[in-house]
Length: 391
Image 1 (cartoon, rainbow, N blue to C red):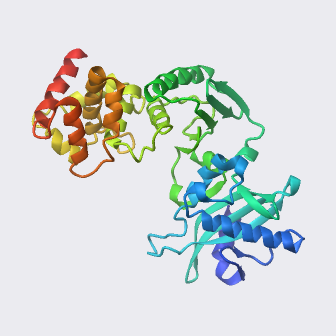
Image 2: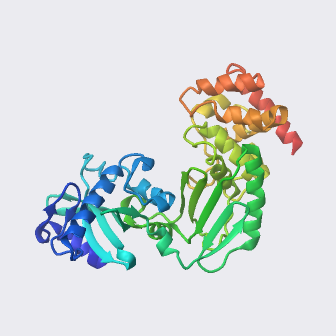
Image 3: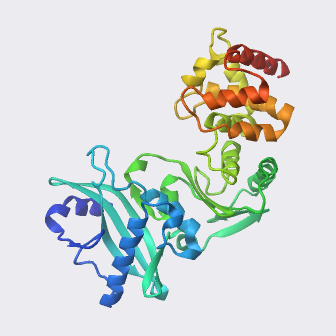
């Protein structure tokens, strides 16, 4: 890494680039000996990078047989040229760093996005791609399948887990049962979900083809996902190399995304369902509610309509957040499901994305429960006390 960073620092004086349509190629890179193949490779790579700014499905330079694996990598190319600090939407440029011949005339491509400011060079990201020869040109894929080709797999219903050495079979079985419950609510049919189990965010990124990205500096854990047709791909990077960390909260979100984009649903209602069905941060719904009642609802002057507009975190930190409005919505969801079944919850989820003022939310709420915006605060206090007595 030190050598790479040193090379980047001397870019302005050492590198002389041959300009192509997009990517800049160092003249000393060992390209394929056949000049026609070299030209085809660079031309195809330029096409791939240009198309990367578009929706993933429109990128015709992606290898057809590995679309979903490559789409999850393509997400990392979005807005990669932009720099907020430099106030420049085209600050970072792609540089071809290495081309390595693989078997079957494939090539491993290593490229970086670098911005130059005076005598300073700024690294935004470094990627790896696999180039596959196709009809006198090349198509590209993420190296995910290549990097995990020696891994093991286990299947539970329509869920496939890929792992390096061992896996927590108990958690896999629990996952299968809970996923089946969520799928029944959501009417999910014939959808295949594949999981790749990795230790942390760094490992996750490496396996999918991201050697470095400035955006993730210092971050330790995350999960990435991609959906295509009847398939969903999830790479776990949250201390989950053995699937020892089963998060029922995130499982709800994952299953919901199989039937509708989470950007289209009302986020507070979505999070409310996740709290109610899967808890959060290792806490059950009962534990969350008890903390909520002690830390938030104990103040009888609390205005629930105000909290909806000005979110309150009663968790231990910003990282392990628990949001008061999500708990309120969980109580509402619980009541709607009891009275109208999950069809009512589905209607509530689809009242429209979160907006200031929550106009669509209040319209749906009144239609489903009879609670108007005017009576909201009083009605929520009644629902809270009812849940308190139930527990």
